Image 1 (cartoon, helix red, strand yellow):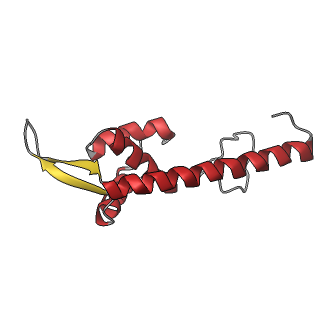
Image 2: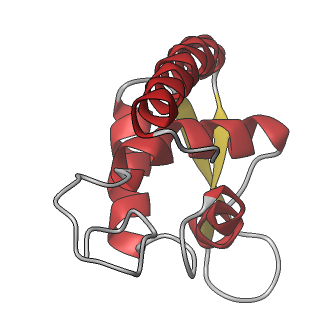
Image 3: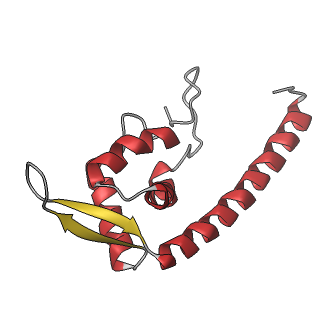
Length: 126
């Protein structure tokens, strides 16, 4: 099965590419408030990442985003337990988040157009 959500058949569509969607989701979450990697994994469920996101995927993207200057981190050493990195969005990350939002909005319009034409073509109401 492809991951498109249709459990009634096996299809050949590419389905959603959630790996590509993780960066804007994490940027938005970090804009809402700074967070640790583990907290981001849990909060990504809100965006459809089932059971949270894969830790490797999250930390690879955090490293990439930090290297690109979209986020920054600092070690938090206060409190019990080991030190943890606290991630924060940067001004450059906020600019990128705005760009992602425009890109997503355009994608939604393309998908609506596709769905409308699909329904017209097959005489489907939904």
